[in-house]
Image (cartoon, rainbow, N blue to C red; front, side):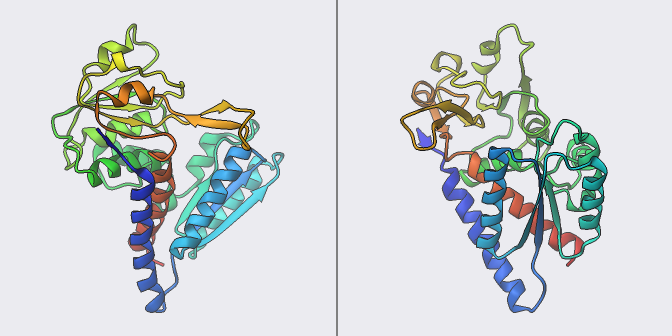
Amino acid sequence: MIIIDGKKIAQEIRSELKAEIDKIKLSGKDVPGLAAILVGDNPASESYVKGKAKACEEVGMRAVTERHPADMKEGSLLELIESYNQNKKFHGILVQLPLPKHIDEDKVIEAVTPKKDVDGFHPVSVGNLVIGKPAFRSCTPAGIQELLIRYKIETKGKHLVVLGRSNIVGKPIANIMLQKKEFANSIVTVCHSAAPDVSYFTKQADILIAAIGSPKFVKGNMVKEGVVVIDVGINRMEDKSSTKGYYLIGDVDFDEVAKKSSYITPVPGGVGPMTVAMLLKNTYEGYIKYGE
Protein backbone atom coordinates (compact mmCIF):
# COMPACT_ATOMS: atom_id res chain seq x y z
CA MET A 1 0.00 0.00 0.00
CA ILE A 2 1.32 3.41 -1.02
CA ILE A 3 0.17 6.61 0.68
CA ILE A 4 -0.29 9.36 -1.92
CA ASP A 5 1.52 12.43 -0.60
CA GLY A 6 -0.46 15.44 -1.82
CA LYS A 7 1.67 17.82 0.22
CA LYS A 8 4.82 16.69 -1.59
CA ILE A 9 3.22 16.86 -5.08
CA ALA A 10 1.74 20.30 -4.36
CA GLN A 11 5.20 21.51 -3.33
CA GLU A 12 6.66 20.12 -6.59
CA ILE A 13 4.04 22.04 -8.60
CA ARG A 14 4.77 25.26 -6.70
CA SER A 15 8.52 24.81 -7.30
CA GLU A 16 7.91 24.30 -11.03
CA LEU A 17 5.74 27.42 -11.18
CA LYS A 18 8.31 29.45 -9.26
CA ALA A 19 11.00 28.46 -11.77
CA GLU A 20 8.79 29.63 -14.67
CA ILE A 21 7.84 32.89 -12.94
CA ASP A 22 11.50 33.58 -12.11
CA LYS A 23 12.19 33.37 -15.88
CA ILE A 24 9.35 35.84 -16.54
CA LYS A 25 10.84 38.26 -13.99
CA LEU A 26 14.30 37.95 -15.56
CA SER A 27 12.85 38.84 -18.96
CA GLY A 28 11.48 42.06 -17.43
CA LYS A 29 7.83 41.16 -18.06
CA ASP A 30 5.01 41.57 -15.57
CA VAL A 31 4.16 38.46 -13.51
CA PRO A 32 0.83 36.58 -13.34
CA GLY A 33 -1.70 37.99 -10.87
CA LEU A 34 -4.54 36.51 -8.83
CA ALA A 35 -7.34 38.56 -7.24
CA ALA A 36 -9.27 36.95 -4.36
CA ILE A 37 -12.53 38.47 -3.14
CA LEU A 38 -13.88 37.59 0.30
CA VAL A 39 -17.32 38.75 1.47
CA GLY A 40 -18.17 38.27 5.14
CA ASP A 41 -16.12 36.69 7.91
CA ASN A 42 -16.40 32.93 7.49
CA PRO A 43 -13.32 31.61 9.38
CA ALA A 44 -12.78 28.65 6.99
CA SER A 45 -12.90 31.01 3.98
CA GLU A 46 -10.53 33.47 5.68
CA SER A 47 -8.04 30.69 6.38
CA TYR A 48 -8.31 29.38 2.80
CA VAL A 49 -7.78 32.83 1.26
CA LYS A 50 -4.75 33.45 3.51
CA GLY A 51 -3.28 30.14 2.33
CA LYS A 52 -3.78 31.16 -1.30
CA ALA A 53 -2.11 34.56 -0.78
CA LYS A 54 0.86 32.90 0.93
CA ALA A 55 1.21 30.36 -1.90
CA CYS A 56 1.12 33.18 -4.50
CA GLU A 57 3.87 34.99 -2.64
CA GLU A 58 5.95 31.80 -2.50
CA VAL A 59 5.90 31.32 -6.31
CA GLY A 60 6.31 35.02 -7.08
CA MET A 61 2.81 35.81 -8.33
CA ARG A 62 1.05 39.11 -7.70
CA ALA A 63 -1.80 38.57 -5.24
CA VAL A 64 -4.46 40.86 -3.88
CA THR A 65 -7.18 39.96 -1.37
CA GLU A 66 -10.29 42.14 -1.28
CA ARG A 67 -12.10 41.76 2.06
CA HIS A 68 -15.64 43.13 2.27
CA PRO A 69 -18.33 43.08 4.98
CA ALA A 70 -21.15 40.51 4.92
CA ASP A 71 -23.68 43.23 4.06
CA MET A 72 -21.91 44.16 0.79
CA LYS A 73 -24.54 44.76 -1.90
CA GLU A 74 -24.72 42.28 -4.78
CA GLY A 75 -24.40 45.14 -7.30
CA SER A 76 -21.20 46.40 -5.67
CA LEU A 77 -19.69 42.91 -5.81
CA LEU A 78 -20.59 42.55 -9.51
CA GLU A 79 -18.99 45.94 -10.23
CA LEU A 80 -15.84 44.90 -8.38
CA ILE A 81 -15.61 41.67 -10.40
CA GLU A 82 -16.01 43.61 -13.63
CA SER A 83 -13.17 45.95 -12.63
CA TYR A 84 -10.88 42.90 -12.28
CA ASN A 85 -12.20 41.47 -15.56
CA GLN A 86 -10.80 44.62 -17.19
CA ASN A 87 -7.58 44.79 -15.16
CA LYS A 88 -4.70 43.41 -17.24
CA LYS A 89 -2.48 42.91 -14.19
CA PHE A 90 -4.71 40.05 -12.99
CA HIS A 91 -5.12 36.75 -14.83
CA GLY A 92 -7.27 34.94 -12.30
CA ILE A 93 -10.28 36.04 -10.27
CA LEU A 94 -11.45 34.01 -7.32
CA VAL A 95 -14.65 34.83 -5.42
CA GLN A 96 -14.56 32.80 -2.20
CA LEU A 97 -17.72 30.74 -1.64
CA PRO A 98 -20.05 30.52 0.21
CA LEU A 99 -21.38 34.05 -0.16
CA PRO A 100 -23.92 35.73 2.18
CA LYS A 101 -27.50 34.60 1.49
CA HIS A 102 -28.65 37.88 -0.10
CA ILE A 103 -26.11 37.48 -2.95
CA ASP A 104 -26.95 35.22 -5.90
CA GLU A 105 -23.94 32.87 -6.26
CA ASP A 106 -24.86 31.91 -9.83
CA LYS A 107 -24.87 35.58 -10.89
CA VAL A 108 -21.48 36.09 -9.28
CA ILE A 109 -19.94 32.98 -10.88
CA GLU A 110 -21.23 34.07 -14.30
CA ALA A 111 -19.89 37.61 -13.79
CA VAL A 112 -16.26 36.40 -13.86
CA THR A 113 -15.00 36.34 -17.45
CA PRO A 114 -14.24 32.75 -18.58
CA LYS A 115 -10.70 33.97 -19.45
CA LYS A 116 -10.04 34.56 -15.72
CA ASP A 117 -12.26 31.83 -14.27
CA VAL A 118 -9.43 30.00 -12.49
CA ASP A 119 -11.93 28.24 -10.20
CA GLY A 120 -13.46 26.56 -13.27
CA PHE A 121 -17.03 27.29 -12.13
CA HIS A 122 -18.32 29.42 -15.06
CA PRO A 123 -20.92 27.61 -17.24
CA VAL A 124 -18.63 28.18 -20.28
CA SER A 125 -15.71 26.46 -18.49
CA VAL A 126 -17.98 23.60 -17.38
CA GLY A 127 -19.46 23.22 -20.88
CA ASN A 128 -16.01 23.11 -22.49
CA LEU A 129 -14.90 20.50 -19.95
CA VAL A 130 -17.92 18.28 -20.73
CA ILE A 131 -17.33 18.34 -24.50
CA GLY A 132 -13.57 17.89 -24.14
CA LYS A 133 -12.41 21.36 -25.19
CA PRO A 134 -9.60 23.19 -23.37
CA ALA A 135 -10.96 24.96 -20.29
CA PHE A 136 -10.09 25.95 -16.75
CA ARG A 137 -10.96 22.95 -14.62
CA SER A 138 -12.13 23.10 -11.01
CA CYS A 139 -9.03 23.03 -8.83
CA THR A 140 -9.85 20.06 -6.60
CA PRO A 141 -10.79 17.68 -9.48
CA ALA A 142 -7.78 18.88 -11.50
CA GLY A 143 -5.64 18.16 -8.43
CA ILE A 144 -7.06 14.64 -8.15
CA GLN A 145 -6.11 13.89 -11.76
CA GLU A 146 -2.66 15.40 -11.20
CA LEU A 147 -2.08 12.98 -8.31
CA LEU A 148 -3.02 10.05 -10.57
CA ILE A 149 -0.62 11.37 -13.24
CA ARG A 150 2.32 11.91 -10.90
CA TYR A 151 1.91 8.51 -9.26
CA LYS A 152 1.52 6.95 -12.75
CA ILE A 153 -1.72 5.20 -11.77
CA GLU A 154 -3.34 3.47 -14.75
CA THR A 155 -6.83 4.83 -15.43
CA LYS A 156 -7.60 3.67 -18.99
CA GLY A 157 -10.54 1.26 -18.94
CA LYS A 158 -10.57 1.19 -15.14
CA HIS A 159 -13.89 1.38 -13.29
CA LEU A 160 -13.78 4.72 -11.49
CA VAL A 161 -16.56 5.28 -8.95
CA VAL A 162 -17.27 8.80 -7.71
CA LEU A 163 -19.17 9.16 -4.44
CA GLY A 164 -20.91 12.54 -4.59
CA ARG A 165 -22.34 14.74 -7.35
CA SER A 166 -21.45 18.29 -6.30
CA ASN A 167 -20.65 20.93 -8.92
CA ILE A 168 -17.29 21.51 -7.20
CA VAL A 169 -15.95 17.93 -7.12
CA GLY A 170 -18.27 15.05 -8.11
CA LYS A 171 -19.56 16.21 -11.49
CA PRO A 172 -16.30 17.77 -12.76
CA ILE A 173 -14.05 14.83 -11.77
CA ALA A 174 -16.49 12.43 -13.48
CA ASN A 175 -16.29 14.53 -16.65
CA ILE A 176 -12.49 14.83 -16.49
CA MET A 177 -12.00 11.09 -16.06
CA LEU A 178 -14.28 9.95 -18.87
CA GLN A 179 -12.52 12.06 -21.53
CA LYS A 180 -10.62 10.07 -24.15
CA LYS A 181 -7.25 11.28 -22.88
CA GLU A 182 -4.20 9.95 -21.11
CA PHE A 183 -4.70 9.46 -17.35
CA ALA A 184 -8.47 9.53 -17.95
CA ASN A 185 -10.46 7.29 -20.35
CA SER A 186 -12.07 5.51 -17.40
CA ILE A 187 -15.43 3.76 -17.09
CA VAL A 188 -17.16 6.23 -14.75
CA THR A 189 -20.00 5.65 -12.29
CA VAL A 190 -21.34 8.57 -10.25
CA CYS A 191 -22.98 7.36 -7.06
CA HIS A 192 -25.08 9.47 -4.66
CA SER A 193 -27.72 9.46 -1.93
CA ALA A 194 -30.43 8.04 -4.21
CA ALA A 195 -28.56 4.71 -4.49
CA PRO A 196 -30.37 2.04 -2.43
CA ASP A 197 -27.01 0.40 -1.65
CA VAL A 198 -23.89 2.49 -2.24
CA SER A 199 -21.59 -0.43 -1.42
CA TYR A 200 -22.90 -2.31 -4.50
CA PHE A 201 -21.00 0.28 -6.57
CA THR A 202 -18.01 0.95 -4.31
CA LYS A 203 -17.12 -2.76 -4.25
CA GLN A 204 -16.73 -2.66 -8.03
CA ALA A 205 -14.36 0.33 -8.03
CA ASP A 206 -10.81 0.04 -9.31
CA ILE A 207 -10.48 3.70 -8.36
CA LEU A 208 -12.78 5.20 -5.71
CA ILE A 209 -13.14 8.96 -5.25
CA ALA A 210 -15.05 9.85 -2.08
CA ALA A 211 -16.49 13.39 -1.95
CA ILE A 212 -19.68 13.35 0.11
CA GLY A 213 -18.76 15.15 3.33
CA SER A 214 -19.60 12.25 5.64
CA PRO A 215 -16.91 11.25 8.17
CA LYS A 216 -15.50 7.71 7.78
CA PHE A 217 -18.42 6.75 5.51
CA VAL A 218 -16.40 4.29 3.39
CA LYS A 219 -15.55 1.19 5.42
CA GLY A 220 -13.17 -1.67 4.67
CA ASN A 221 -16.01 -4.02 3.68
CA MET A 222 -17.15 -1.54 0.99
CA VAL A 223 -14.05 -1.86 -1.23
CA LYS A 224 -12.19 -4.61 -3.04
CA GLU A 225 -8.54 -5.61 -2.68
CA GLY A 226 -6.09 -3.40 -4.60
CA VAL A 227 -8.44 -0.41 -4.92
CA VAL A 228 -7.00 3.11 -5.44
CA VAL A 229 -8.72 5.46 -2.97
CA ILE A 230 -8.86 9.24 -3.27
CA ASP A 231 -10.48 10.79 -0.19
CA VAL A 232 -11.70 14.34 -0.84
CA GLY A 233 -13.64 14.67 2.42
CA ILE A 234 -12.54 17.26 4.96
CA ASN A 235 -14.70 16.88 8.05
CA ARG A 236 -14.01 18.94 11.18
CA MET A 237 -14.48 16.90 14.34
CA GLU A 238 -14.62 18.59 17.73
CA ASP A 239 -11.56 18.05 19.91
CA LYS A 240 -11.41 20.17 23.06
CA SER A 241 -7.94 18.86 23.93
CA SER A 242 -6.49 20.34 20.70
CA THR A 243 -5.35 23.98 20.43
CA LYS A 244 -7.49 24.34 17.27
CA GLY A 245 -10.47 22.77 18.98
CA TYR A 246 -10.97 20.27 16.15
CA TYR A 247 -9.25 17.63 14.06
CA LEU A 248 -9.81 16.67 10.42
CA ILE A 249 -10.92 13.32 9.05
CA GLY A 250 -11.97 12.21 5.59
CA ASP A 251 -14.96 10.41 4.10
CA VAL A 252 -12.96 7.17 4.22
CA ASP A 253 -12.21 5.10 7.32
CA PHE A 254 -8.47 5.23 6.61
CA ASP A 255 -7.34 2.51 9.03
CA GLU A 256 -9.81 -0.03 7.65
CA VAL A 257 -9.63 0.85 3.94
CA ALA A 258 -5.83 1.30 3.76
CA LYS A 259 -5.39 -2.42 4.48
CA LYS A 260 -7.08 -3.27 1.17
CA SER A 261 -5.77 -0.36 -0.94
CA SER A 262 -2.93 -0.26 -3.44
CA TYR A 263 -2.84 3.56 -3.15
CA ILE A 264 -4.70 5.86 -0.76
CA THR A 265 -4.72 9.57 0.08
CA PRO A 266 -4.59 10.64 3.75
CA VAL A 267 -6.66 13.43 5.32
CA PRO A 268 -5.14 15.90 5.88
CA GLY A 269 -2.20 15.98 3.45
CA GLY A 270 -3.78 14.27 0.44
CA VAL A 271 -6.09 16.13 -1.93
CA GLY A 272 -6.31 19.35 0.16
CA PRO A 273 -2.89 20.85 -0.68
CA MET A 274 -3.47 20.13 -4.39
CA THR A 275 -6.41 22.54 -4.60
CA VAL A 276 -4.29 25.65 -4.01
CA ALA A 277 -1.46 24.30 -6.21
CA MET A 278 -3.88 23.85 -9.14
CA LEU A 279 -5.34 27.31 -8.56
CA LEU A 280 -1.84 28.77 -9.03
CA LYS A 281 -1.30 26.55 -12.08
CA ASN A 282 -4.60 27.74 -13.61
CA THR A 283 -3.60 31.38 -13.00
CA TYR A 284 -0.21 30.81 -14.64
CA GLU A 285 -1.86 29.08 -17.62
CA GLY A 286 -4.33 31.98 -17.95
CA TYR A 287 -1.37 34.36 -18.06
CA ILE A 288 0.34 32.30 -20.80
CA LYS A 289 -2.82 31.86 -22.86
CA TYR A 290 -4.39 35.29 -22.61
CA GLY A 291 -1.28 37.45 -22.31
CA GLU A 292 0.06 39.84 -19.76
